[in-house]
Image (cartoon, rainbow, N blue to C red; front, side):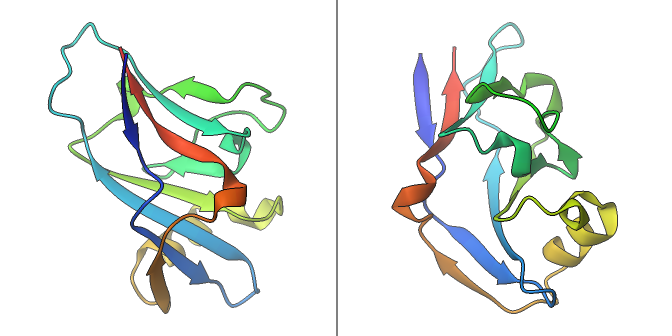
Amino acid sequence: MHEISLERAWERHVVPDECIAWVRWFQKPSNIDSDVQVYLVADPCRLRNMWLNGNSLVEPDYEAGHVCISEQLCQRNTLVFCQSDRPVCSTMKWFVEITSGRLTSDRVLLPLDFGKVGLKIG
């Protein structure tokens, strides 16, 4: 199984309601065949607060630390992580506000206490 780390090159946005959102753009891995599965790994499990290309990855009660995203991948992908559990973070309006480029942001490494975030291919 091949792993790709997504811990670098995040943009941190502070939304007007003081919620902090993290955004990471990444390309679809070029070395995958149609029968190969791609998993997003977030350990400890933070998948409940993550969206890929505007779509929630899992249900709020999801417990595992990985989810198959093979069918959801585009050539260019946007992964958004909301640092809070507030329901406002799950609206499309919120997602568009975060990814529009209108909010100030800084480019940083994902903090170590967020754990491991990456792709597993295989």
